[in-house]
Length: 361
Image 1 (cartoon, rainbow, N blue to C red):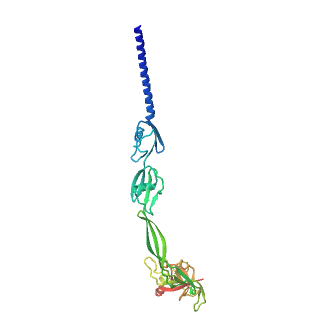
Image 2: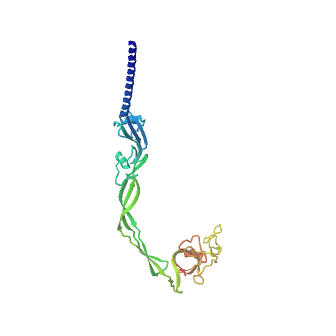
Image 3: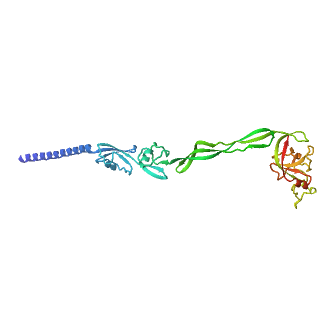
């Protein structure tokens, strides 16, 4: 009986002991669970306001949380709060990735790694002086973005005084007593002088603009004064009054029909000295090359430049009478005429004269 009782109490003690161990284990597990819940921290990490990572950590600092999230930081990246800040039970961490912007000034390019801001802040960070007239592109208030190119152009303004000639004007007045076609100088013109104050704009050493700020006239120009003839009535003794369109001052020479009979020299090619290969005694208008006497019924024949005196025109050659523009010549250009004479010796004796030719109406 005693042995049975001993066995019963021994078995009960063992069960009690096991129960105690089980309770202790459960209490320990509960304690660990409470500790885990109370001491483990949660971190929410945002990168550039886009990527978000949520982690549970036993770490103590922001750096621990970032490392646990396996986020690699660049040397210029910014972290808020700072890496050495302690973690709270719930901590929000913001990471701003740095990006490059390029600043060119004074022929030198610099790279700045930044996480944001505007153009002015970058220029201030680099301690670049910007003058009053300098140009910044893009403007100082422009917000930064990756790979933005900022150009600072140096603008200089210089002022110089430049002298310029003022051209004179030409005044023409009519003179009823002067023959039409004749122009007479009354007074020579003289140019004036002005001074311009000029602003020169220089961009990065190169002139880009000039503009006149003010002008001062030093000497006024003097007008050139001319008289133009309006008289179209020609009166010569021995003839009626003649109406003419204009008068031309010409250089006059003479030529012969160019035939052997007129004594004109002929070269080995059969060309005459006066008319060249056209030595058949016919003018370029088809009229026979027969010298006239200067009367209205039998006018002289002359070679002309048709651009000055049209072929077929009846003219009056002062001192020689009437003439008909029937021919042209290779050497007759501008205000020149060639008067047809009966033979070569007469043409030579005529020589070279300055005459007036009236183109008749």
